Image (cartoon, rainbow, N blue to C red; front, side, top):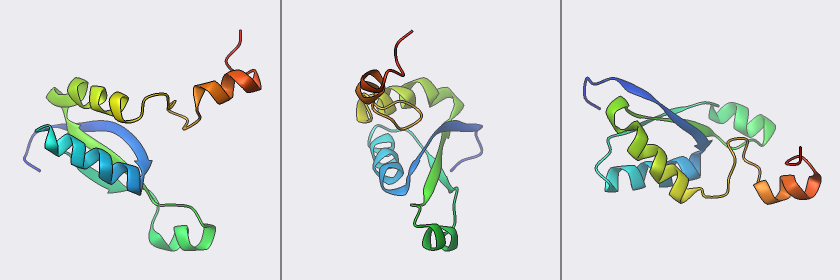
Length: 92
């Protein structure tokens, strides 16, 4: 990464973060990832490692568009919006 200002884009399970970071790089967007949970915690709890993905501030809008395309239909809480409607969460 160069010396520019990087900003938080999103947090994903490691496998999805890797896929996202590859897509960002394929689209000319420099990016970096920071692990959230270490391997020890993942082994103890069975939780997958999570990665926080960062991009240059000037590329944030473009990067958000790629996130939307890759993870269409996924809310930021990781739940499918259709499941929320069925459970009554999405109703007023």
